[in-house]
Length: 67
Image 1 (cartoon, one colour):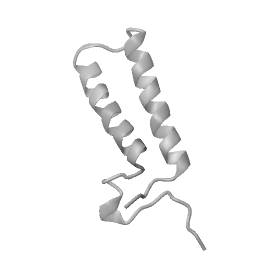
Image 2 (cartoon, one colour; image 1 turned 180 degrees about the vertical axis):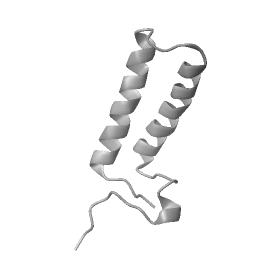
Image 3 (tube, rainbow, N blue to C red; image 1 turned 90 degrees about the horizontal axis):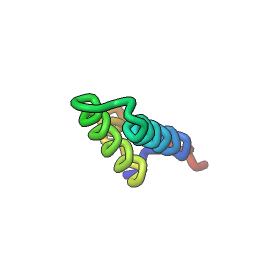
């Protein structure tokens, strides 16, 4: 069940790009890079599938409602 709108997905992709950029520029390294890398993978996967499992228990959705 898709529960993410376009803006939500774009913000997540921007965060992924920022993490990749910070790593590429050498601003993050070590454990922090690993943790943020894992976060980036989760953000990327949820953005590509338009589904956020954390929204489901609360019944949240950022998708526009159709009339």
